Amino acid sequence: MNSESIYSMRVVSSAFKNEDFIPIKYTCDGQDLSPELEWDLVTNAKSYAIIVEDPDAPGGTFIHWVIYNITTNRLPEGVPRLYKSQYGVQGVNDFGNIGYNGPCPPKTHPPHRYYFYVYAIDTILLEIKNINADKLKSLMEGHGIERGFVMGKYKRK
Image (tube, rainbow, N blue to C red; front, side):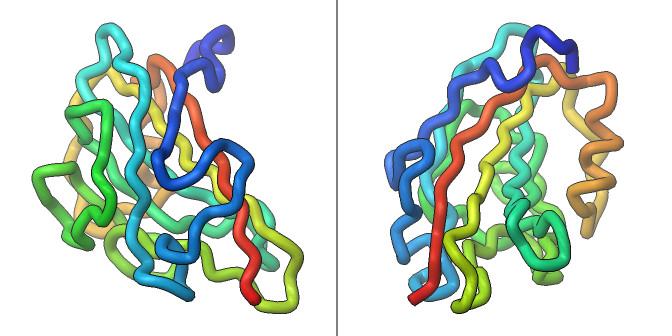
């Protein structure tokens, strides 16, 4: 990633606005669907990757979604929890599952923040079954062109 382009890519969701609360439908208290996401097309990007992080988790940053080799600039709501689909290759989140698992902070906690990071990459990455976020970040090393994010919050009742 070059330093001038840090978080310069616009990322939006029809489900929530940046820094707003994420609707229950996209959390463990609802249907646990991945929200619709859209981002800027980036010149020279061959693919995109998404990593969803909760930096407020008790044990440190908790990963909710790892998906890469996305070849469009949007994902629909409810991406199936499959290793490989028409949308991309999905890795393992910190729940130990393939695909998206939404916000599920401890009920006693104040709202947690959930960052939906989108990375524009200059190549199609090697497919690795059960890849985690750290391994994906190391695969992307030297291939990132731009990145951006949308952040939503959630508190359980």
